[in-house]
Amino acid sequence: MGYKALITIDLPDIDSSKRDEFYKVLSDKKWTKIDSLTTAWKVSFNDEFLRDKAIATLKAHLAKAKDTSEAESVGYAIQLEKEPVVIGEL
Image 1: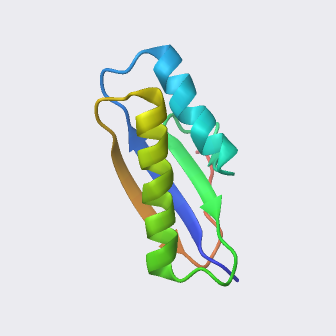
Image 2: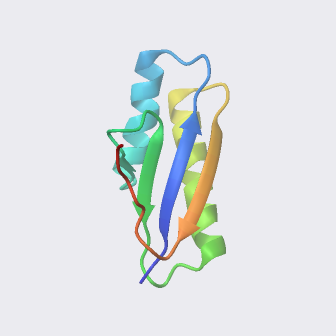
Image 3: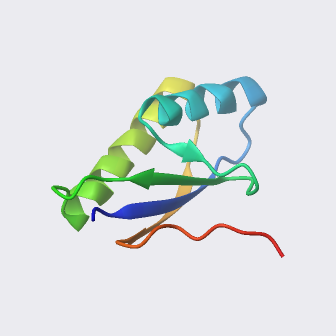
């Protein structure tokens, strides 16, 4: 069972068209937006990905999205786990 990532992203002072470009890069890289949460995404990795490689891959995707959208800054938090991401509402 490969790693599952939960990523939250902060894109301060970015307009909606640049945000859309940023999100398109992530979607093209097989990231899945968590609809019920404003800035949360999830990504699954194959068994062959070690933790360090998964983190490096996620950071590279974020850098690509930043460059493509011309975002000035990107804040993020990444959590990796072998179990699926738990998503819900109360």
